[in-house]
Image 1 (cartoon, rainbow, N blue to C red):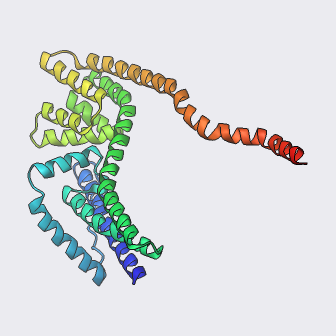
Image 2: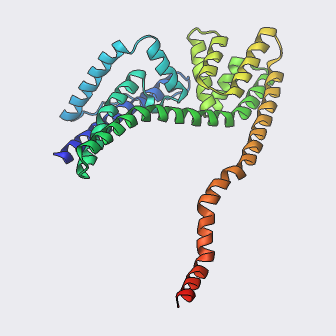
Image 3: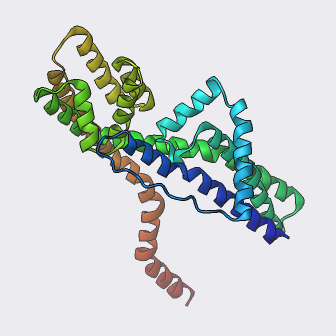
Length: 302
């Protein structure tokens, strides 16, 4: 019975992840449909699912409909902002994330409890295992989003100087700022390219350039990018040449990145000190002094 419950829960979790990840292909098709040179996609017949899969899908969509009523307003906006900062992992919506948290809150404590029973742990220990599973189920999604957000910010910081150089060259060639962004999006891939693509889409839908750029600043919590966007908006407001502003910002970002690398290099000896003292020195002493100590005790006792 325990093995059957374990198999059922793992199957439910795998199928839920599969349903959430189905949005990837649809989003890619919508992006290709927005470009003029995108190939026309042929209609494909949706493969028929099995009876159990159809039941799970119906339950999932029913849960999503009921959850959308509760996930409205500021709460949904906050969750949406967190997901966008993390790069929309698995193309999840706020409702998908909320349902996934509920499923994890049901599955992980149960798995921890089953594992504790299989180990023969007493009832009190099983309760501790279940509580640990509940804590893990609550913390895992938020920690995952924070990790993805940090990875995305690091990638954006690495791309920023080259992006600014490309925008500068495009502006000096006579293109407008929106046209330069469009050229950047069509030529480069990465975090900043995705953000500026979304920025152009918002401008096409009626937002002002200022609102769209401020949205990029809010989605990427990066100090260097905040400074660049502030300078761009200030140059647009005062009528200053934007190409010169971007060139100066590119040099400043590279200088800041070099200084950050030097700072990390200066911290490296301190970080190496703790594993050196805790792991390397004891092993070294055992290898060097071990035979001498053995020989000493052998001679002393003889």
